[in-house]
Structure formats: C-alpha cells, structure tokens
Image 1 (cartoon, helix red, strand yellow):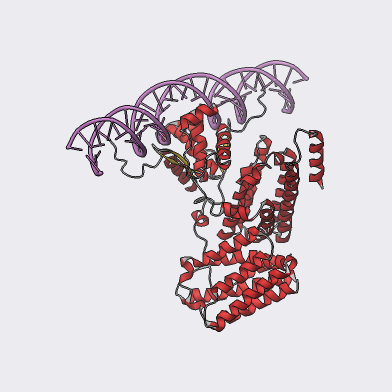
Image 2: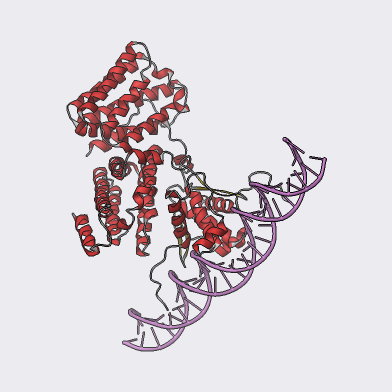
Length: 256
Length: 256
DNA sequence: ATTGGTCAAGTGGTTTTACCAATTCAAGGC
DNA sequence: GCCTTGAATTGGTAAAACCACTTGACCAAT
C-alpha cells in the first residue's frame, strides 16, 4: 500500500488557483474570454469535469461569468468585491492589517459581550475546521477567513461583517500572492491556530477586554510573520543563495 | 421541445438551492452528514457530476464540509435559523452608525496620537468651513463629511480612510432620504458643530482617550437625533426605541 | 479483555465517453 | 441591405468505470 501521504488538496482547487493566478497576472484581463473548457482541460492535463468544478468555484466567488454557448468571461471589480482594487491601490498589506487590528479587535470585544450561544458555537466550528484542515496538510485559508467572519457576525452588526469581509478579500490580491510561500509553514499556521484559540476562549468567558487584546495580539503576530515574509521575498535576496541561512533567519525573526 | 424560454437556470444551482433549503429547513442540522453523492443524485433524478458541482458551490460558500472517504457534513449554524440573508442585505442606518461609533472612535484616538500638524490644520479647516456654511443658512453636509474624512486621513492609514468614506456614502442611500427634514434643524447642526469642536480639541491636545470618547459621544448624539427623527417619521423600527443609545457598545469599550 | 492488524464495504475523487442545448457567425436567399 | 438558416463552437448533462481514502467489523495475537 503506497503512502501517498500528501497531495490531499483536491484537484478542482488546484485548477481554480491556477486559473485565478492567470487572471491576476494579467494574462486574462477583465472582460476577456477564457479558453474553452475542453482546451483548458487538455492544456492542464486534467479532465473536463475537473475543469468545470474549478470554474464553478470561481463563478461562486464572483470571479468569472459562465455564459452558455458563448464562453467563460473574466469579471472585473464590478461585482463581488466592491472596492477591492481601490482599497489595495490606496493602502498596502500593512495598512490593511493595521485597520484590521483596530476593527476586528473591537469586533472581538463586541462579540464577547453580545454573541449568542449558537454564534459562539459557529466560531468554535470554524476553529475546529481549521484544525482539521491543518491536520490534513492543507492551508486552512478558508477556515481562517471563516473564523474572523463569524466573530464579526457575532457582533450582530451587518455593517461590521461587510467591512471585515471586504478587508479579507484583499488577501486574494496580487500583493499577497508572493508571500504565500512564506506563510505556508506549518509552524506559522500552528501559531495562528493557538492565537485563534485564545480569542475564542476570551469570547466564551464573555471577557471583552481579553477578547480584544487576544485578537489584536493575533493580528500583531500576523503582522510580524508578514514582515519577515516580505523581507525574505525582497528583490535583492536571491532565494538560491544560502537557503539554510534564509530559513534560519526567517525563523529567528518570527520568534521575536 | 421544452420551452426554456427564459432563465434556464443551471442545474447545479437548482440542486444547490434544494440542498441549501433542506439544510435550513432543519432536515440536516449542523454537524449532520448528508446522503452520499450517489444517493443524492438518484433521489433528485440527476447525475452525480451535477450533484458534485452543487456541493462544490456549497463548499465554496462555506455551508458544507466535504471530507474524502467519509462524507459531506453540514457546517452552518450561524445562519441556520435566523438572520440568513439579512447579513447580505443592506445593513440599516443604525447598524451603520454603530459601526461608525466603533471605527471612527478609534480613528480619532489614532489621529490624536499620530496626526501631523498639517493634518490637524486640515481638520480645523473642515470645521471652520462647516461653521461658515451654517452661518450662511446652508446644510453643512459636505463640510460634515470632510471633517470625518480628514480625521480618518490623519491616522495615516489609507484603508481606514476608505472605510470611513464608504460608510459615509451610505448616507446617500434611500433610508436616509426621509430623515433629511428632521436633521435640518439649525439647533441640531449647532449641537453637531459643538461636538466636532470637542473632538478637534482632544486631538489638538494629543489626548487619544478623550478624542475617542468625544467622537463616540458625537455619534451617539447623532444616533439619538436619528432615532427621534425616525420615530417622528412614523416608522416603527423595533431597534430604535426612543431613549435608546449605544450604551451597550460604550460599556464594551470603556472596560478596556 | 485488550490490543493490533487485516479486510471489505462505503464514500468521495477523477477520468473517459457520449450526447444534448444554446450561442455565434458566416453563407445564402429575400 | 436585411433576414433566414445551418454548421461550427461552446457550455450542460449523463453514464460508467476505476482509484484512493475512511470506516468499522472481524479476527488473531497478546
């Protein structure tokens, strides 16, 4: 029995990621038509149903528009993400994280005060999903998003939910793409999970102040992890040179 | 020949809707496992690939969790019984005000800490403009907006500026239209101006806590003015009882 | 009785093949 | 010129088959 230990990532997600990056790279600008499903399948070496599954995922995300008999078209920033490119143009990842620090910290405090039991259960559920995905060796990006969103939902304020969702969408922006590798480390995800647990615990205990500081600490750590990733991905640092040193340096920075 | 005259909704969406309604009807509560894909396909009279496409859509939406070799499990207890599309729908004026209470309060505190002299001067300029417009008998709506925006700009965070601007744009929405008359009173504008002055003073003194509470007091007063206007307009909004304010949120913040 | 392993059934994952339905566009008829 | 029409293209759906993984029952060894 061969141990295909990893590669549990489902095919449709890989294909969707590939197409998404093609769109973001400018290969297919807004309004452009993608190659037919059959061509995409042949080019990527997969079957057409798999390509269809990926396209449906992208369609639900609001990235493409599938028109029967015509083709698949790239949607601009008109729907789905309201002011996505706008925010990103005006502010980098670090300003976004700072804004999240302010807003999501308050969301956590509010959630601790006014969350319903079922909403707390929903937060817990998102955390467990994240844990499960990590155990499977996947990047728990979706579960991470779900955790933050459900805390916002627990405030009972739709406007705050909308803002948190909008800020999170930025993570799919091009600026974050180059940092994905550096954020992929299991240790980093493990740290993020522990920070999530601290937030949930404070909310469960109805301790607003603790929830706020736990969430702010989480985003602060994310900021540090991000900073190290940014540095390591710097232009003047060839990856091929002294990979061991880079790895050690990265770890050292993260632990501070 | 079946007349798919208009809107031949794609099969996977119909199936997804059907499963979604089954989940929300309580047929499959949170944590329950759905029937196997093959059974679902047979029961619904469609093929398995179509069911898979629907499940992928629901998975992207965060409603279900697909586990290889095990089954499909229901995730959503946050939007199960109540408040489903409510989040997606427009959040009302009161939720928007509460969001502003949270965000702009922090903006004022941040501005007090890190605003440049020229940015403080810009805030002052907006305040003087508001005063001048009022003296001319105009509605200082533009100057009001400018005041809040420049405080956000003084934080130096583009993302926060964008959020404040976005929240302000909501004021042009239809819900606010019927309240214009009640907010037009010179006395009310005079009170708002005085509250603005208190905010600016705290920022000038570099007192973050005072700036936050001044801004929050301003928005709380706006909330009260709004509530009375709403009641006078004959609308029966359950959340907007006379005398209600943002006390709940205030407590949450002051506890820090 | 507990532990450990194997095995078989069930489940989702993927591919292949085939055909149906809608759109598109150009050739041909008015 | 405008309209019709039909073939080519494209997405939509179905069916069958095989693979990989999970689960739980069963059995053997401790």
